[in-house]
Length: 130
Image: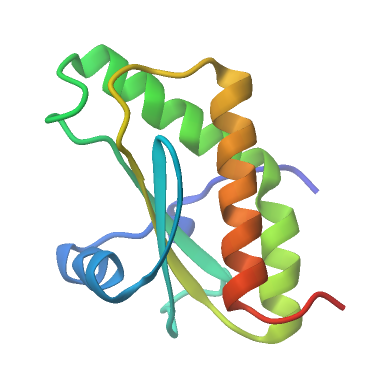
C-alpha cells in the first residue's frame, strides 16, 4: 500500500477545527500539541487531520511552511498504524496538530515526537490494543 495524504483525509472547516481544538482530548509533547475528537466524519477515511503553525510563534513564512511539511510527511508515512487501530475499533477521529515552538526541529526529531504523540492519543482514547 502506497503512503498518501489525500484531500478527503484533511480536516477542513473553521467550525469543525474549532470544535476539535476546544472540546477535543489533548496530548502534548513539546513543541507539539495534538487535540483529537471521536466523531462521525463525512468520508470513508478513519481520520481527518489538520496541521497548524501559528504566526505568533514562527514569524517566517518559509519556516512555518517547512514545519507544516515535516508534520504532514511524518503523518503520511506512519498513518497506517493508527488507521488500522481506528478501523479495528470502528471509530472515526478528527485531529488537529499545533506547533508551539520557536524554530523548526530537525526532521528526525519532529517525526519521532509526532509518532509518539499519535501513538499515545490512540492508546489513551481509542481502546485497548488487540
